[in-house]
Image (cartoon, rainbow, N blue to C red; front, side):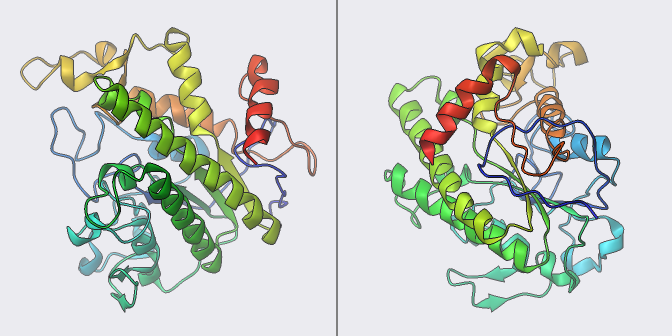
Length: 339
């Protein structure tokens, strides 16, 4: 069994030398991880994905040598755990019950327990991971990435203009979701924070909206980091693998050419449509597929960077901070200020 490592700080980039074999990769989240539960109908999508090809968790599954998690939407059709339908992410999913739940889009808590309603007091056995009536295995990897839709789809349930309050609630929802996963036996949890949503093409034309989206991202990440520190202290036997997507995206946006991207302020769908199809090479030059989602090239890049960190520490309690060699001290200083 993999030795459990307590990571003294979260969202630090981990540097190590050997890989570990997981049995399964479970996915909970939103459109960034969805492989068809809530199909995308935009041009150039691949079988309903919110991208023009595979998304990060599919590439990651390949690198981890586990079965790629398939869509898990056919709840009433008798799908079984053995079918590999273990990607529960829904495009539009919020961190907890909200406006998109009304539209039939499962929030992250519903993806886990299948509970519906603002208080989660009505349980539908055909929804969520809980329908399998089993716990996660000790060598399963459980990945969670969500939060942006609480900004995008605040509607009447949340106060959209209260970016700080909305972000704090979303982060606290995620901490509750992580506790639920631990209750269901998750021992290896991969948690990703939010990139700077204000730097996506969605907000390129409005300085005010861009600033508010950035404020939401920063508040969400700060709240999540502080809560995770407490959660990790209370669960020292759980392997929390925390990925700082905020810093990772900023690194890519700062030097896109170093990662093979020529276009980061415009998106693939702005330049092409089904009557003017791009070549594979041309599409790979874009970081963004639409105004908020990465292209499959972007997803693959993220998976490569994430994979480099889903490996055991070289020694117990050995913590290595930073992202690339030149960024180690800078990122550590920034992170420690948050907590």
